[in-house]
Length: 211
Image 1 (cartoon, rainbow, N blue to C red):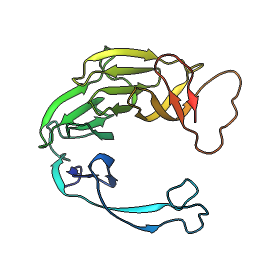
Image 2: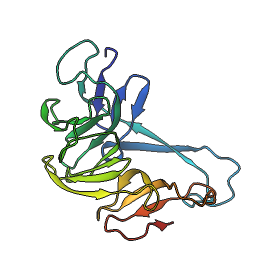
Image 3: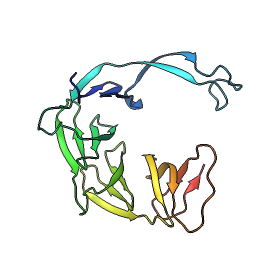
């Protein structure tokens, strides 16, 4: 594998200095050890020990070129997702687009592209792909929803003073976002949340729920 390649395995994608393990494609073969010997709770509970999972995966295909000039020359790969059909969605934040690669490693389509029009990307922070291949594209001031074919559906505008900037990495089946934080820039300084709070952010204008 040359530098700049992304190697797709049944359960693994390899990039330079980065290894990702999509849960949908993992074959788990053992739970052989616990990482936290000081845990007081029973295994399988929040208070219980961490469980180390050993996985086995087989290579499916490799995509990416460090020196080429084709579609698979990546700038800055921010995230990768698989949909239910086994297509790989690669979000390149430098190119401001998502490349959709089929199970055999060939390009199916390109979603987005730099610009300010409907369905185009500008200062995108996160691109979330649902199981059906639809997209939730987050920016600093808005969230765009795209159909599985990349067509623009609608936009939710964000106000940094009220709704805040949503920091999310996944979405629930009903479209609500699972956010690790919501940054607001109001006049009053908000108290810092303890621990690692999780926010459920709806897209219908309702208040976010703190778990």
